[in-house]
Image 1 (cartoon, rainbow, N blue to C red):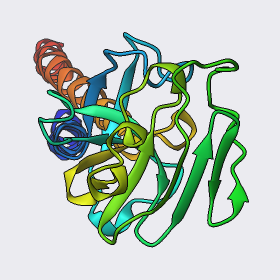
Image 2 (cartoon, rainbow, N blue to C red):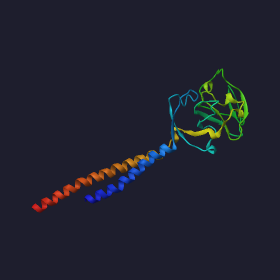
Image 3 (cartoon, rainbow, N blue to C red):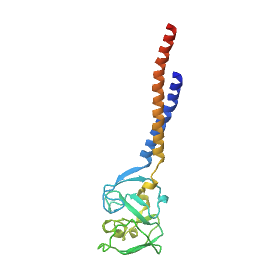
Image 4 (cartoon, rainbow, N blue to C red):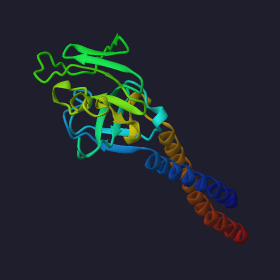
Length: 213
């Protein structure tokens, strides 16, 4: 019956719209897309790469995170991606041969090969509370904590962190699934509406033919 198809359409279409709009709004509000501009995070994040950044609170920053930060203008003039090496209370030591945190040498497979780096800096610092010791993955060409050791041991305020880069394997799937379901429901609702519209005239024509017979 035509009214049945129309009822189905009125049920599915609003649900589809809600899911679709909700998924788009969630992605726009929660996540930020950033284009990498410099060399400091090569090879994992080369210039021109687009990364997804999720906002996090100051207590959500961990060692190893790649974060988007707003450093003081005296250091950098625009937001920068850097990797968190040490958090408040950590002792960070390093030289051209590697980095240690609290006496443990870090395994850093993400670091670009910088053997023979003429810019290698040696340091031995205790990270102040509420601050982060950060480095670029391309150590030979990165403006990071090593070059600002005279202020707060080179550490940047955790409050300057805008968000954390979301790796591909942990990228949010909820909005994508919700959006896909929204499209399915919307398409099904529109299909039911069109079917109902077509069946109505056909039923009327059939009734008229029966009366003539």
